[in-house]
Length: 136
Image (cartoon, rainbow, N blue to C red; front, side):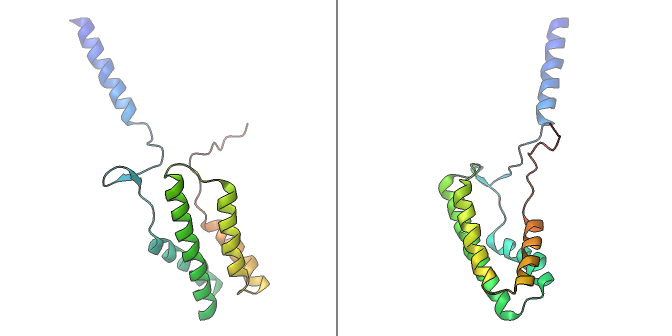
C-alpha cells in the first residue's frame, strides 16, 4: 500500500512538473495545426507606429513604404507557408526579400531618413526568446 501511495505521488509530481515547462514559444489556435501570427494588418499598424510616424514621412513616402512592406509581408507569409510553420526558411531567401524591400524603400527616402529607418527597423525586429544569452 505504501509503495502504491509513493508511486501515485511521484506520478502526480511528474505531471505537475511537465505542465510547468515552457511551451516552446508557439501558440496554437483553432484546429491546433497553425501557429498564431500577427495578421498583415496588425503588422502594418506596428509599421505605422514604430517607423512611419517617427520618421515623419510625407504622404508619398509613407504610401511607398506601406506598399513595400505589404509586399514583403505577403511574400514572407507565402515563404513560411511553403516552408512550413515552425521551420525557418533559408536565410538566403529571407535576405533576398529584405534586400528587395529595402531597395524599394531606399529609392524614396533621403540618405538621412534611410539611415534613421534602418535604426528603427532593427528595433522593430522580433527578438528570439529561445537563444541562449549566457556567454560561453
